[in-house]
Image 1 (cartoon, helix red, strand yellow):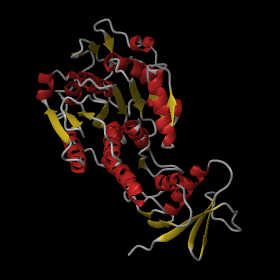
Image 2 (cartoon, rainbow, N blue to C red; image 1 turned 90 degrees about the vertical axis):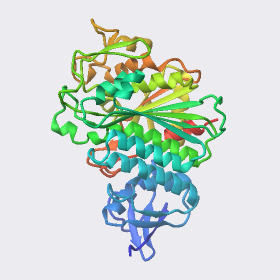
Image 3 (cartoon, one colour; image 1 turned 45 degrees about the vertical axis):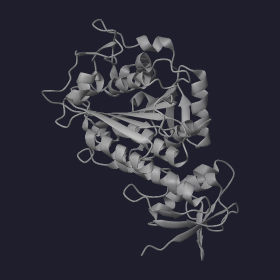
Image 4 (cartoon, helix red, strand yellow; image 1 turned 120 degrees about the horizontal axis):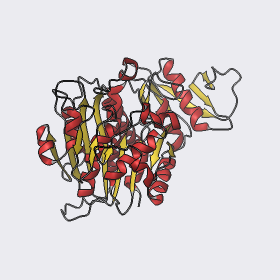
Length: 424
């Protein structure tokens, strides 16, 4: 039986504290000593240190704010074991929040062999339907059915694998009225493994590519949590799921895809596949008449270069939508930073053979690669009344771990999307 350690907070210095994490131990358990500055970061780092000492069950004793409790939870637990936390207050709310975060992480941590596109779609549909079975309907399009329906991006990227690509459409409609407008559409990149295709990644870059479905996991977990928190809007979820592999059936450089909205796209980099599948999801979201569209994706290395591993990158053409996203991230104490996106970015990937290319031949898409990728997506995002929000999830995965997170998925971004869903 695992022994539960009490963890308390103190603003007093310790006579003999343990390490830079400012943790000491006494007869009652562990004490985290807070000082001036970023106390949320201090608490999260202390949680990591306690985990690294083999502590897997804790009770948060004494006075903890809601923010402090979640800061601890973000740092606690290992890649394979999230550990057990007894909350100081708001037990049910925090249990729901942590359940969603741990589910998100388990999806990202699943091996590529275990999590095929169909398995990802089925897992999301099953878990969300279990939360609100009377309010959710789902539809899947698999393999060649995608091509018949006109979803050329998902089909094109996924056709190289023996395991077929999938689009999952999930409709959460608490009113039960089919005429209720769709308030928000969520679109998630669900590339369950990304080899880069014929633009093959080196092994060092490929080994973490089970995380390339982090966008799908993030929006699915956010919707699950929002429903448990009482979401009363109609929301449609579109997951664009595929494996990007090399085979005799795989899409090739020089191919041209003709999308349902009339846009033709020349393939100049098969490793710029995420934007190709998201384009289908964005078109579907517009066909649903969504008043706001939010997409999330582990889309570009350029975003990681720009904002690092503790922030996600935000793109929006609509200033009000951008302000809403930044406010939602701040409420969840998640890092989010707006990067440039203007109409000019839609023409940054020129082609002589199609309306646009899917990238450039320069490494990383060239200068401004993250903005150029967002500009590509803007061709498909439409102009929803409440704006389109694109989240490039630079912070969703901590390769090797760090002082704030264990190795693997971080769940950063889930609360941003949840708060957007729940906002008035």
